[in-house]
Length: 347
Image 1 (cartoon, helix red, strand yellow):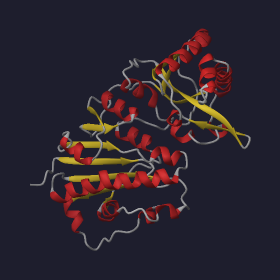
Image 2: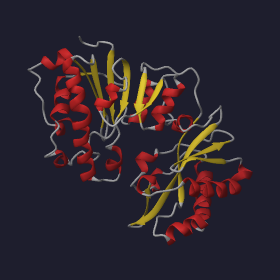
Image 3: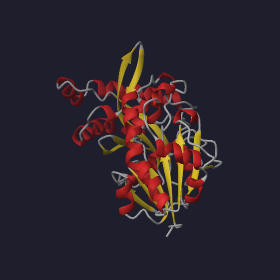
Image 4: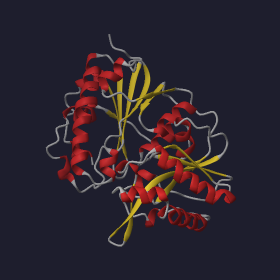
């Protein structure tokens, strides 16, 4: 019996390699299940969006026109209480000079302990207390900054800055100059901090700056079509909590997802294992991630759809410029005239 009540949405950031002309990267990676779903599915018109975060905003009734307000929702997912305050993500990063440019590395490439985060945040709070700024290192790798009022500031998400030169990505807007000055103070303070002296003495990378992004305040009365969100991403989890729907940890694979109860209702599953290798230009890691995605998620969900265990499967894939969304019901798999084509053909 077909379970028409189960509709699974797969959100797939960086399914397409960021460099549009690098088509050889797809060669030799077998993705028959993914290619079949893309071929058989019906294209859905989506609001123009080039990022998974913007897609999430649209589907949780948020307006990302002035930037994705990730900070308060991530804070909520990490156990904080956003209240009505204005928040920024202020994540610990390492800046290094490459070819005369400052390039950012996020905490995905270096470890940081909760104790180190606490000591660094304590020093920052002591320094900026007169400005009414307060840093909260709720997790070693995710810090939050509470502001007394909303700044006139446009920021770049950390995911877009990681592995890149920061010069064109620094905060912009009417208040940018003041915040650039504060960032210089942050860097000067952290440069000589005992925590970083210890890290460098042990051969580690210094936490020599923070990256400000995702500013905003919580919005009341949020709605969404989803009954549950399965993700490791704090923004997606926080949105689910704010909209009062289930926020679930992402299982290891599709089989465990279905066993965990994602076989009814409208489920959003965020699969972001391609994000980090895409950010840092790790072609090998990205190809291996794509193979794992096909093996552990796409192929089993295609089989579940074929057997009628789920009623509909929607894929929302993101690449260098825009989004590709397809919706596949069991009957669509019989559309023999729609032949699968290589993944690279969708770039």
